[in-house]
Length: 60
Image (cartoon, rainbow, N blue to C red):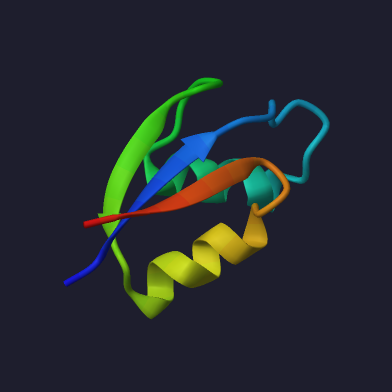
């Protein structure tokens, strides 16, 4: 299955609590943290919520 590399590129300071919780659920704690997750609809939805704070790359 495909993998996604999710990197936090912007700070969550000033963001809604929902966005902070979503970043934490993805496993992102600090600026420039990266995680690799499976490409599933649940993860895509979480990324869509915080799309202005993260960048996403597909990993083979």
